[in-house]
Image 1 (spheres, rainbow, N blue to C red):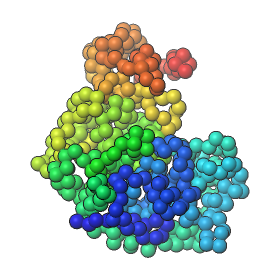
Image 2 (cartoon, rainbow, N blue to C red):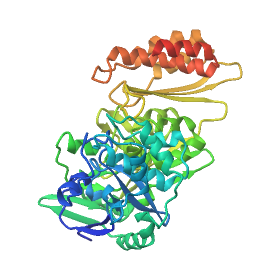
Image 3 (tube, rainbow, N blue to C red):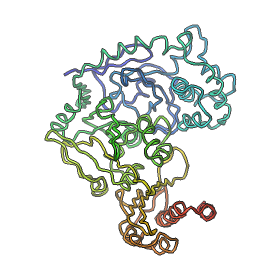
Image 4 (cartoon, rainbow, N blue to C red):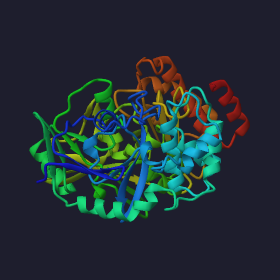
Length: 489
């Protein structure tokens, strides 16, 4: 057993033997290290002013990702390299090329958001050669500016893309080999327990060690990406103890492509899953692009989105519509169950004490079937869903509905199938008359709530309209779909 969290901060080794489980990286940087370039704006992972890079070892290489320091806990940083905006410029004050591009293109006015933009652009510059306009905009989804506008910042990204990372001027390229060696030395495989008064945080050395920790601490709070749990602390001021961090467990971060589907480890982030989704289930990749900003997608995990059990989580509805199976693990072994059965009631899942989500198996949509997922939110990007609906349809040779699975989030206390609607459709011709006649069945399946995201009436009507939209898309009626889209807007 070890008793310290060890990581590298801007090239300096950090070792912490006393640490609150809920101490955020933002507070550590500003209050403990006086690195004030990292700003607090929203404290919930929305504005990007707190963006830093976190480097971790993946398949023997060092991979840097932009993350939100405001909701990233220091306890999750073991064996990583944290890079802040202060590390970019040369010691003589010469600006890094990314910083200089922001100056040249007039990408800053008040400057409060600028360090976060610089770090997001830096992360893109390190990983993507000559990014497209779409890639630049995607990398900046999680950064908000209220005075400059985004065009000068995009132009800065385009300008600096002509220069590739080089040890001549980039601090991370200069020290890459040394950082890799030092991070490897920190990965000794031991379970780490750090205390602060009566509070404890635990970093298991392996997945087997995680199972044992949860057997000993069945009420422990498991934290992977902290994109939701972080808000429990920054907004609700909740005390969490003990906290078990698992984002370093590479055995939970595997994606296995099989003949009939793909198995996604519970620790796989949205960013890690994107490529496999884009290849095998493109509709899910499109959904991932609308989950938070790039920083959130680099932290948040698909397993965490499932285990959290939120009724407005974005991934459960499409996974349920595809017939996904979740695998649970404990010291006594593993068990699998349909994902739709995992959600029992609001805040309650079919997970025994000591169990954790290990993976989820997602079947590919069968050839000839239709699959779609629709996220409805006030903002198109970086917003929480008012509701999220998924449809998976199989037609027989005569054009009748052989099978259909419809699942919604945001319509009940859990992600839930529209079984009454499904029953109204199965066996009938896939026509506008059929789907129109089935619309009232939504009232038997769902009794949504009114909250600040949407009214119950809006949710119910939108769910019914999405069925019509799905029909128009699958029937290939672009003019009718355009008419519908206009009415919906």
